[in-house]
Structure formats: structure tokens, C-alpha cells
Length: 331
Image (cartoon, rainbow, N blue to C red; front, side, top):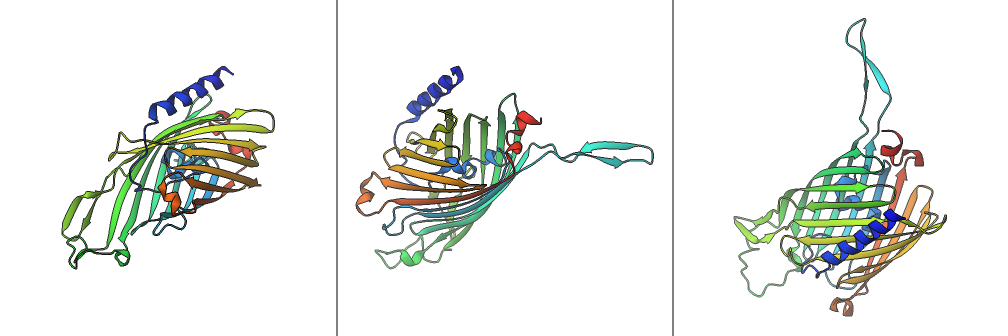
């Protein structure tokens, strides 16, 4: 009980410190169900729960709004588990027994397509994570490398003059490399992590001109959560996600989320994204398969032209319960 109160106070303090205002622009996609696949925001989560997971996420934002953001992603991650020792002969009389894997490495990757207005990003990311076992928790570090195609759909552009120095004679398709880094502390009851994406902050170079104002800004994510057991069948999990960018470092956006679980097979929750949206979410688990849905009710003036946002998530986790929390059971 003492630990539960301590982490609850920590979450409340953390939320109050970072609650300021909403980011002015959206360069990267939003995820209302980020807690179901935090790997998309923090590479340190690759293989952290020791399951082999495959996730499909589809988000249609501001339905009914012309050229509204649309995101689709397919991700997979796993843990390279410890295997039994094998014998390797160095001489006829001598054999050395060595483990095939340390059990601390996680890998993952995903492919994505993100449409936002007249721009479209399509690419892939590969992630390497290293997990350090502690007494009753696990400290994880992750590094991800990505490459994607950045495309301008000039057919949807309305020009106010016949000659445009940015578009005329320039490439409409760019190929951009980038990287992300993350750290995460997890246990059976709580998690807390920090990650940075768009580390390279690439400038978008069209033709022979390098327009510094057209730049991908570094994004920062801070997340945390704690699971409280109400009874043998019910539990509640409050979480918080804090986001900002180098472009508007003083402008913060916060997601406050609370989900209630029934036997870990059903869940429902509410979320508030500061000055942006209220979110209703629900999900169900069938064996190793998970289905989740979230509806965002927009709080800004966009709601006059939109029917809200919809997000679907389908996941499959392979590996029995004995594989979980391996830092407690086998290290």
C-alpha cells in the first residue's frame, strides 16, 4: 500500500508539472491507445514483456475533414530469450560450454504510412533494445533506425500564382533517414519511460534549395503508469503521456488516461488530451489476441467540420505466462 500511494503521488506531481498547453503543429501521428503498443513511441519496449507481439494500428483522424491525418502501422517485436548451454569443442579433449544467448536483447520493427494534409510519409523502422534485470523490475534501453519516403501530393495544392519557387522544378519525393532513442523502467505494477524521436531533425531539401524552415523537429515523450488491484477480478490503470518538440519546447501536450480491467480480458477507459480531445476506448482479449477501439471527440473548432477520430488496434501475443517478467524468474 505504501508503494501504491508513492507512485500515485508521483504520477499526480508529474502531470501537474508538465501540464501547460498543446503543441501548435502535428508532424508525427497521434496514438490514443499508445499504452497498448508503446513500442511505437519508445524503442526501449522492444521485447520488454518477453512476448512475441504483432500489432496492427489504423487511425482515421478528424473523419469528414478534407485531407485529415491518416495513419496505418504494422509492428512486430520479440525477445531473444536465454537458451540452454551447448558444448563447443576446441580440441579433442576439451569442450567449452557457452550460452547461445544472454536473454537480454529485444528486437523489433514496423512499417508505416502516415498521411497529413498534402504530405505523406511511408517507411520502416528497425529497433534494438537491451534489458537489464533488477530486483523486481527491469531497466531497458532502445535505439531505432528508420528510413522513409516523404512525398508531396502537389495535385491537391492550389497556387495563387503560376510560378512557385518551392514546387517548380523540384523533387516531390524525398528519402530521409532518422533515429530514435528511449529508456524504460518496468515492473509488474508500474512503468515509466522517456524517448526522443526524429533525432536527426532533417531539413527537407527540394531541388537545389534547402529551406531550413521546412524541418522535421525532434519529439520528446515522457510516459508513466501504475496498475492498482481493486479486487481479484478488477484492476484500474491510470497513465500519463507528455509530449513536446524542439519547435515549441515550452508548449506541452498531455494525455491523461484511466482504464478499468475485468479479469484482464475486458477493458474500458477514458482519456483527455489537453485542449484537443476526449477519448473513449474499449477492448477485449480472446486467447492471445487483443482487439481495441478508441473514439476521439475533438474539443477544438475542428469538431464543426469533423465526425471525430477513430482508432483500431489488433494485436497477437505469442508465449505463455511463464515467459513474462523473466528478470524475476530466471535471471
